[in-house]
Image 1 (cartoon, rainbow, N blue to C red):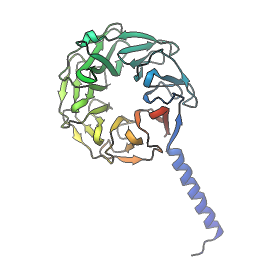
Image 2 (image 1 turned 90 degrees about the horizontal axis):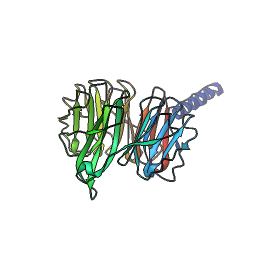
Image 3 (image 1 turned 30 degrees about the vertical axis):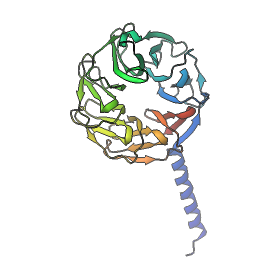
Image 4 (image 1 turned 90 degrees about the vertical axis):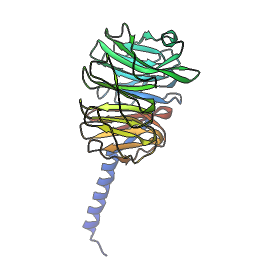
Length: 323
């Protein structure tokens, strides 16, 4: 078959446009100088300013949308498991059994509270996830271990902006890993052994929801009071459209452990996990397809805003996705 020169040029231009479009829509990787430490948490306050936290107390921020990162030392060796900002100035970091807070946008940090083994029958507390609803009311979850064996869950509430914390009783002794609130009343917690807990009274009391799985569940995300998603080990994906009264298991294209899920809107969502897995859905999480991440390293945490997506993982890896 013979092509005219003009046709060939058009084909080349179209091919280049397709390649460029593919490159622009993909994930671009970079690394923060973490000394090889894994990154466990990522949070962006706005399109420019964000934070990452990781093993051995590593904490860093960017003011230029991730072009450069500056380490902010807290003087600790415990792993940072969560970073969360209530406002542009007020933020919280979880490390070991301690809650660190800032009121000046992260220029300075102080230890606001430390849970003691004495609070948990001399077991060692470890905090994993924290959420605030406004400036006063907040919740933290984790586990208490003895000789590296989890013996109890941790759920604590503050009603005075973190000045004091009260440990609450919950209907499970399983490790509690992640918490999410959709409004000032309704929240969910997920954890080991397929645990899903729900509150409708701003976290004062919690009830167990039926997950129909014994897989460890690592992350929960709700867009509104009815629509929610949960991910966990062995490629587990659960979704609900009735506030968690019923959870249905969704077929996953990956069997790897899935560690973080977040929806951009009611239809579009992303999941990241071990082995560089990134999954995407455009139909409210009913079906998922695998995206090319360009890495086989573990991806531990995910953050999405209206324009960008961020995933962080092993050895200081940071992936950015521009929509």
